[in-house]
Length: 128
Image 1 (cartoon, one colour):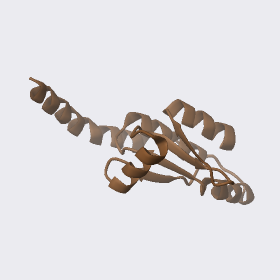
Image 2 (cartoon, rainbow, N blue to C red):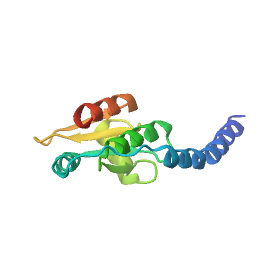
Image 3 (tube, helix red, strand yellow):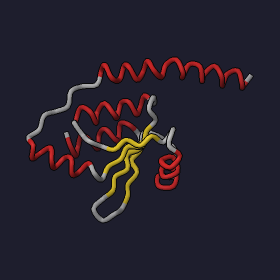
Image 4 (cartoon, helix red, strand yellow):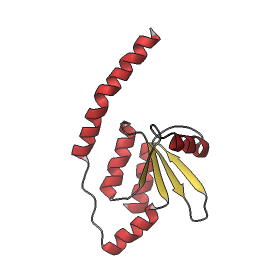
């Protein structure tokens, strides 16, 4: 019975994943406009950020939409398909849970921020 349930949900994911990705592309908002100087400052600040994510995770899509809305060039790291990123997420953050924003501070200390609402709030506070 468990095997049947597992295959049922895998099938549902296979059908819904492309729909969710197409929906993301069609509904992603336009980026905010900034002066070239402001955008250069934002680009510099984003070099210390990385988002660990799964491509078709709805919570990751939510964060990616906010990143697009704010016009942030944040590195996206796929923890589902790339074993190195998955390992780094587990070792650094303590768990393989996405989305997770890696924030590297000026002193080299790393902060791992989980939960899509918390990540969006942090991004809005720093770049909104």
